[in-house]
Amino acid sequence: MTASLNNSPSKANLSIAQACAITFQGNASNDLQQDAFFFLDNWYQEDLGVMAVTPVASPFCLAVSDGVASSNHSQHCSKAVVKAISRLWSERKSIRSDSIHQLINQAKHSSKRHDAAATLAMVVGEVNSEGLVKATITHVGDSRVYWLPEGTSQWQCLTRDHNLLNELIDQQAQEQGRQAEFSDYNREGMAGSLYSITECFALTTDDSYISSEAPEANSCTIDVNSGDCLLVCTDGIHDLVPSHNWQTVSAQTDLQEWLITLKNQVYDSDGNAYDNGTAIVVRFD
Image (cartoon, rainbow, N blue to C red; front, side, top):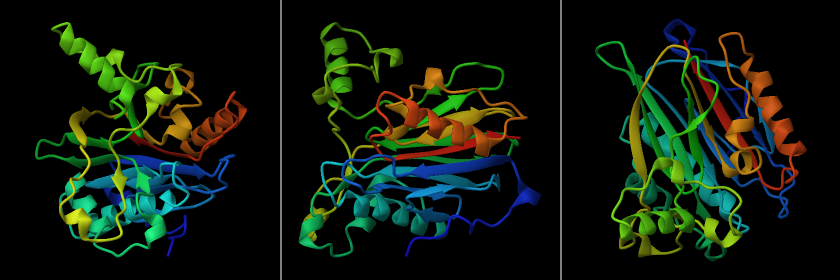
């Protein structure tokens, strides 16, 4: 059962940040909402919703999962991903791609859902013994995490999409005897086939998951300072409104209004919100 968008408890007494989420179906051609997300302690899959700005305590988890539209049943995979995250988080277990892979395929799925697929972008953060906030960024596929350090004017992408284009960039760099620069990745305006996803979660309908491999996930950890912001989003956001067109966030910014403006930019873009969109923004105190 999908949780309501109004069920997040307040943790103001332990707050280290403020967070807000928005999700919308957009004008997806299949008329489905295939995005799902995990917000602090609940999972959600909604056609349209804007959360109230919510205090964030340590530790915390924020994640989005985007059902790959090649299947009309991929909403079941994205939902399974965030439900697995919810279970692992409530049981205080490490959230890794292999543990998510195992959980989503322990259930027997109907044959029509076979190969339904989904991506993941996730931030897990906590205050360490020195009082510093450490944020671990994990992603699979082309959902992304962005960082806006305090005082800067440009959002920085922290994740390298798992797609054919970036694999070709790595291959070219290797042939030239060099390491690819991060700025080489996630290029815009290339041929559509180059954006084919090379890593994702997928549902199976039998016991084949036991011998199948979990998708390859990439992780990194950053130090987060007061005033910094992070944004976790699906490609229905960053594909239609590149990050250089996003507004900055200050201590005075209303996070709800900021996300609504971002949604409006998606609808006003040349792509006219052709995909589902989900974004979670968190601003650190």
